[in-house]
Length: 120
Image 1 (cartoon, one colour):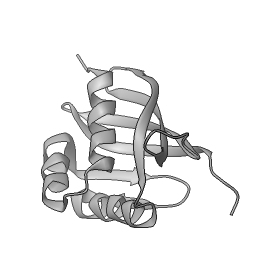
Image 2 (cartoon, helix red, strand yellow; image 1 turned 60 degrees about the vertical axis):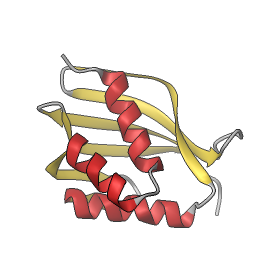
Image 3 (cartoon, helix red, strand yellow; image 1 turned 180 degrees about the vertical axis):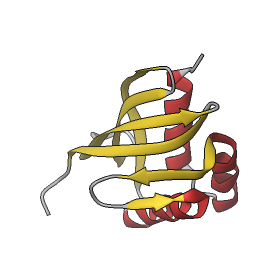
Image 4 (cartoon, helix red, strand yellow; image 1 turned 135 degrees about the vertical axis):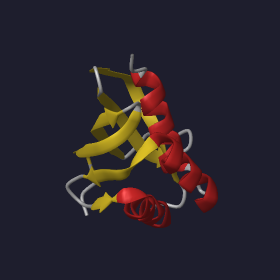
């Protein structure tokens, strides 16, 4: 049985991990080798591609961190959760909802939607 909350928590932890080696370990443990990520602004495939996306977001928003908004839910190998990206202790000016599909308990694909993005 899939623990949707654990999947979402590990996902957010990955996007917040600043140490490249640790981030790669997390990808290996929690994502399939052929995993894909896509949202309206970017896409990546495999551990290298997804790691590069995360690094790019961290470079663009060095003082921001991801956090879960509400709880994760889903059915079977499908997980849905919402997140915010912003400064620690403040409101998140960027918000989204991601849908993950799992394979053997690891993320195989993520489709992301941006729910709130500041103008400009």
